[in-house]
Length: 292
Ligand SMILES: [Zn+2]
Image (cartoon, rainbow, N blue to C red; front, side, top):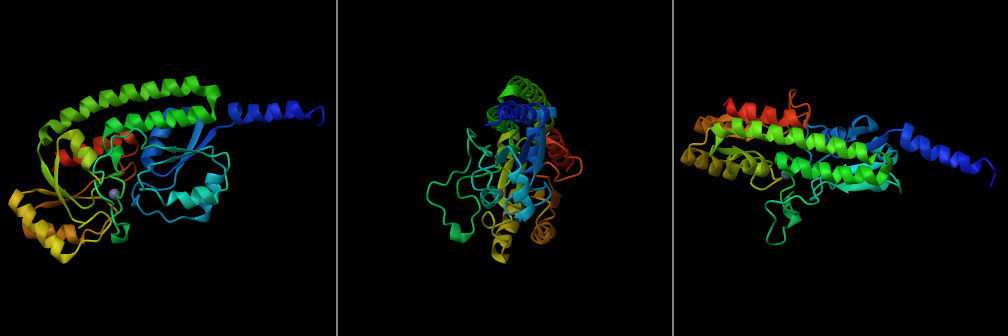
């Protein structure tokens, strides 16, 4: 070994942890937003799914493998929502990549009591994966990302911990603010297109009575739409809430037959213009709901 080899290796280690930023790739925009708040100036974050498209189905582009190939950390939603990320991670051939499953320690809702037949197209086989929509789970996500960051960049552990504590403090303050906005929504009954909202509904006292999809991931059928029309009439439901990436055909049919209103809610950061980070996501959803 040349006499310069060891100093050179030390120099590389120094530049990669001190001068270089930790490269994070996330499956979704919500994880990106939280990772940016925990990583601060020390990280770069890119999300593969942008918030205005369906997080269950993301087209795998070869460029995604190159991005993940250069990353230090990959943050996934887990619970089978982003199983599309597995071939990207494998294809990246990045042996040093640390993968963080952000669903770890999340109290999962709607866990199936019997085996779900995936051949039926149900996209929630392990329970409901839309857990980021309960802001209390934002802190669980933050702690998972914190642990991943410390494992790839232990030199900056203290900074990451401080950022996490600042995130937690702001989140708690915002949760109190959101709960006061949601007070007027207590007991409001809605129908949603996809089963994206059980965590949100639990957190804010809203009741989801039914879904435009017959099962998660299955397109609306005329017979199911007829059942939902009856339900909306019977329960006198005023809002048919839909995610921005679905067709509004069935929701509009239900609205026309019942007098309910179709309301588009952003289920992720970037799903509406104003929902630019994890905090403004909840500001936006609650503002839309309270205004209808
Ligand atoms: Zn889903």
